[in-house]
Length: 74
Image 1 (cartoon, rainbow, N blue to C red):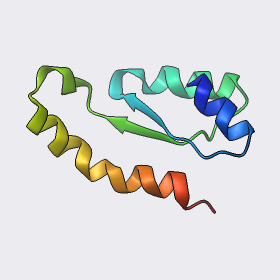
Image 2 (cartoon, one colour; image 1 turned 90 degrees about the horizontal axis):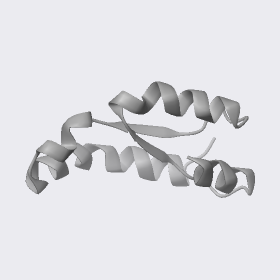
Image 3 (cartoon, rainbow, N blue to C red; image 1 turned 120 degrees about the vertical axis):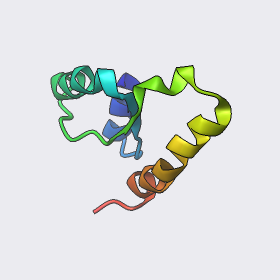
């Protein structure tokens, strides 16, 4: 989280990847750091209980969002 804040402060795009149970804490932390709009991608919290193929299947649709947030800024 703090690395992303520091990168963003330097003008370097970043994305925080956070699991569902930690979204609220991540948003509070971002707000406390003065970056309430810090880009975040939320992934399912049960990824540790699944095999690699299922994890890839869940994360693959998010790759486009990650790239967009890193390279296409308004």
